[in-house]
Length: 151
Image 1 (cartoon, rainbow, N blue to C red):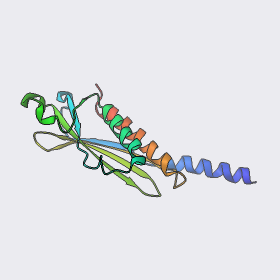
Image 2: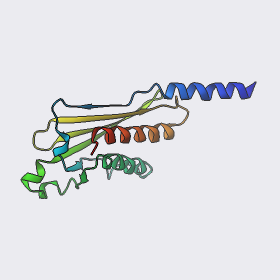
Image 3: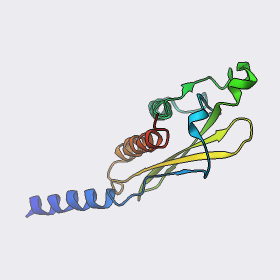
């Protein structure tokens, strides 16, 4: 009987996890093929607890799935004006609740400050494993980025 209840909860968790919504929104008329560079604006790098750095690494890995060349936020002003016109700024957002974890990566045009792409990855184990929720959401946001920036 206990085995049946456990299997039921596992099945229910998988069903509800599949109900989380991962999506991308691309601005109408945005020509993403013109962009060659991306920089991640991250003000929390050195204030972040060391146990969370592993997730930051995974966020950077997800941004690299765009196929764009990563440029340090401290070197973006070293790019020529022509290169800056092909630069996107990436900003992260993470919302962790018991119901689900959502990771958002927004891509903004460097010259115009216009948001062009918003990719969202969501995942849930219904509070069973916060670590699995974060990893699942990071994987899904990486998939959304890959799909938005098909090269």
